[in-house]
Length: 439
Ligand code: NAP
Ligand code: HSE
Image: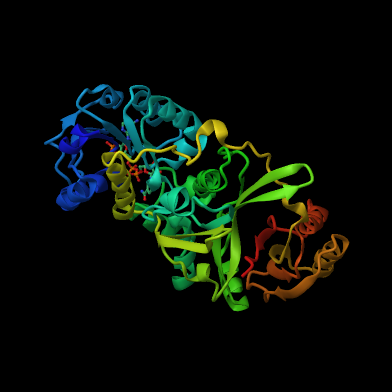
């Protein structure tokens, strides 16, 4: 410990894309300040990526280069490996296992890997008394892992929810503000470095689900259960839904929510990611662009809101560097706050009995009797309609949009009503179901 204070923390970085190059830029720019705060310098020793010759906007010629990134974990001159490659398995996982099994610290921004293999990696870290840190894996630059692991650690966390994917939030808020087309805004999010290498992970809600599973584990002291997250993304949301939501006084946001429900069979873990209608005036309605916002409710702290840039090179590099500073200060601790052996394994909750208001959108054939068919299904499913809007005929004829807002009622009733419409020849597309976020 004592001689650590005199030695730099020597790191190796695998992955020199948006985040990796951002970390090098940050360490170059703020190196002196970081050394003062960490008590010692943080020094990049070696790097690896696919293409050694690529211009990354930062000078990498001063670092040792490894063609095979696993070699970074075997170097005697490296204390901590920083994994910024991505992917739940493959080279990122092999490198992470090699680093921890060799007793080196590991810092990663890889939520996919943590969601799938975080418990195994945490067990390896605990066994080796090595650091495993992943602040950048959830909500970019927002210190929400630190907030839950440290700031709220004296509380029972009853609920965690919020906006966890910068790309989706950017797409939805840009479509809302400019009327731009989904594909064009997604391309811009990719250009700006917000999206995953495969943006399907963003727009289908998987990335937000991975982050939610990590937050739930830390917040509730439960084992990560990514397969237990119920996920629907934003691909079915149309510009017409955004316009309709606006007319009703709402915006659409992709929301992740998790809580622990006490049932007669014991506690159950609810985790889900869904596009929701958020009333204008609700704090989450004003979260625009790649911004993320996480709400955590603690039994003594009350409701806490963590908000800030959720994607991009600078914010993500900031979170990676904060983890490195913690390690330089010898602040290690259990990666999930509680040792893995003591995390609770909770079965998933069934939310059908929960109540909410819902926006339902149907694309239907423009012919007599269709509206009666929809409302009959709602009646038979015991769903009470608060308002119903049928858009005027489109000039091409043939298809019209019918939007409904329901009164508060059981989720299972909406599922039952939609089941009654399954296979109906009147529908031209699958109905869209968007819950209305309570205030
Ligand atoms: P990226 O720009 O695509 O960079 C990935 C880097 O990994 C590239 O340098 C690439 O090398 C290297 N790489 C990929 N496959 C490799 C392989 N098989 N062998 C060797 N190197 C390989 O990705 P990123 O946006 O920086 O994201 C990195 C990680 O951070 C991911 O886990 C992501 O989920 C996470 N993250 C990203 C953000 C964000 O806003 N971008 C925010 C939070 C977390 P080449 O450059 O030579 O091709
Ligand atoms: N693709 C992710 C997002 C990056 O858009 O939120 C940050 O984790």
